[in-house]
Length: 483
Image 1 (cartoon, one colour):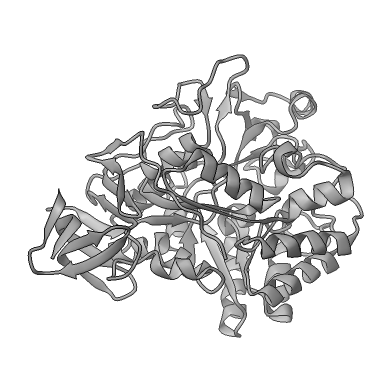
Image 2: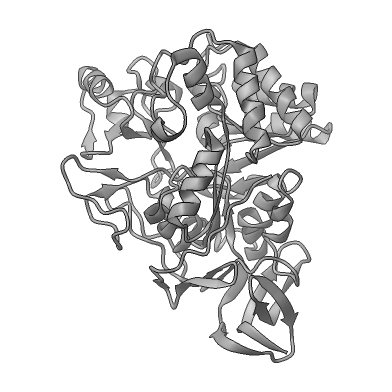
């Protein structure tokens, strides 16, 4: 049999079957058709001698959904990037926009509780008139009382339109009635989809919080039977991760369906107008709880004072800003701890590009211009994960956290995910070929759009997007993932 593509002689790692050995992989169309020790003939041949052949990485938490951001992720080994924490509303508009523009990697969206609540409680628009997923988080209009039946009705419609679950930015509206969260979880459980929650603060971070964020997620999972996915458990738990992880493991052992994710960075990023960035609230996530923990992304300015922070919040409330949670150099062991966290998958929390004011920007330009900024996790999460874990964890375990683990989070709700995260006959030909000794992240906080290196080939649905380490600018084989 002749194959369209043959990946020859690589170290093939399939995390589900435990395969870890030299094999040849044959691809026909968009599916894997053979995984064999025997020689295979194909129209196109990729020599993978000395390289690892793995399932393409699946990112459950990517706010950077435009073409340029997806290209950066492809160069980081990602073949599927989903917007599940913030979500979109209406999802039909988000899917239609991505399909019309084309995407180099697969894409999908949850239903956005925050955006729907902004519409119901604050009168903010949905759909084409709606800004990006992190906009308006600092607005007080959506954080007050809201008509719960209207919210649930709109969420139910989004799920009927194929949303992959419900994204709940609860940490940005921490005064929300806990009963509302329970009602949303019940809706998700009835629909058979996960929730993806940015938790409220912990009581150690905010003694006045309505309910401890970790207690709430784990309790509601047990109470409703909903699948609760705990977004970036490392960055919301900060110095209290041991307590939170122990609680998650306890309820999992009791039968609750709780999954979680981590990213290997010590600095977060969100809208500067969000509650976390108020001078009186910096202690919740910030390393020192002072304005100097904050860097305004549009200009790279380190905020010098509380007065300056308030000015920036008023002038550009949706503008992205960094918040330093700990020093990555002096606390490098914490990054290893995140990577090794039991049962947690890897997810980037990638964010959209920030463009300097007044600079002309073509979103199809490649490589991105120097005046485009983002969080380095948007470009380097998976390269960094592989680098950090190189001497601490078995490679197959790390690959599982980036592939099979994320696929299993979604596969009950979205059957298409059962064909992803695996190198097996009949599975989707989403494949990454990389040099395990050389792979690393290139992005830094000063140069945040530098791509990772060591990812030699990336195929999405059988079509090359990265070849010999170079992005193929005309490749747009990404497809939608829906329920």
